[in-house]
Image 1 (cartoon, one colour):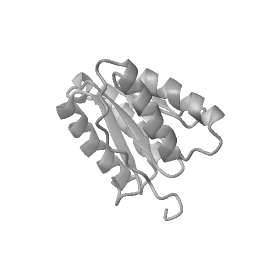
Image 2 (tube, one colour; image 1 turned 90 degrees about the horizontal axis):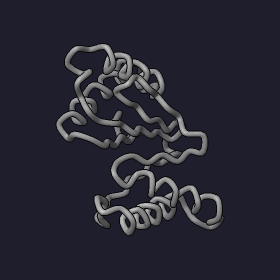
Image 3 (spheres, helix red, strand yellow; image 1 turned 45 degrees about the vertical axis):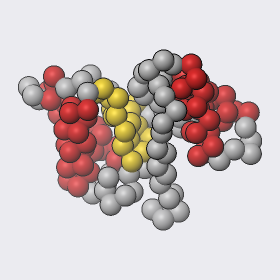
Image 4 (cartoon, one colour; image 1 turned 120 degrees about the horizontal axis):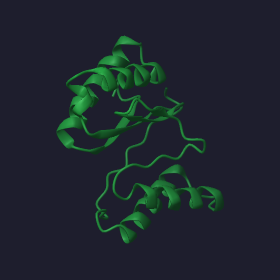
Length: 141
């Protein structure tokens, strides 16, 4: 999103998620790429809008400086440890990634994500080993 500077992922209904992606991108444009402000405004709209209120999804949003979880309950959550996972295998991926982050001094962020997702896929019956990992160039932003 926002000319490739921001990544977003979802858990929940695909149709609902695409609606929310569009709204989030509109908010990003409206607030000049300010991720936190766009997230808060989307969460407010999501919670109060008669149509959006029914949408069932979670959005995970990342920029080079911010990592946020946005929910339909109006929550905008920034994780304390810069690790965020959503979806059916999310808790497994989160636990594995936190362990790798704490104990894998020579691992890159990509390695931590890949290994965390692999461990989650080994544990969760709803998670598979097919994945696409996208990265943001923090130095270019």
